[in-house]
Image (cartoon, rainbow over all chains, first blue to last red; front, side, top):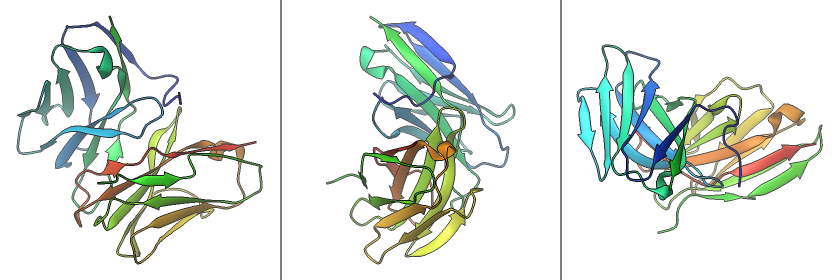
Length: 112
Length: 113
């Protein structure tokens, strides 16, 4: 498959455990944040998003937490599965008129 | 419904040549954005088009250009290719006029030799 990042930080978790992927967002004025998952050979796939007026949002097995005070964003994956192995990117928007700015990504490796 | 379609999937070019990549957005989506993805720099924004107009442009040299057609399909062109242009080029489309989240295609892997 295609390599999307040779020098990415890597998080290894046991199957069934919870995963927490962290991201430091770059701009305190950003009003929208989003997490993408990228598997080998594919483009980034939307996971979950959150507006700046929220501090938590839950999806199916995933939760995004936002702390604007310290410019920190995290993605929690419950009961991690082998299919969750991928590179995860956070991204942010200053506004609806500006493009998404992506973080460097974290590789999640699930150990069966 | 069909997702974002990028063609070709793989491309090998020689330094100095030029290349054109194509992107067909999801039907009904009018905004198309292009990103370059490399291991060292991650995803870097190239440009974004909405209704055939370039609305946003990233910090890439003038060798990188793009356009959008009336059916929202988009092309990007890179002239005078350099080795450093080797990358995965990703296209994304958005249904809204705003840029709150996009749907990505699988990308075109360009290798310059």
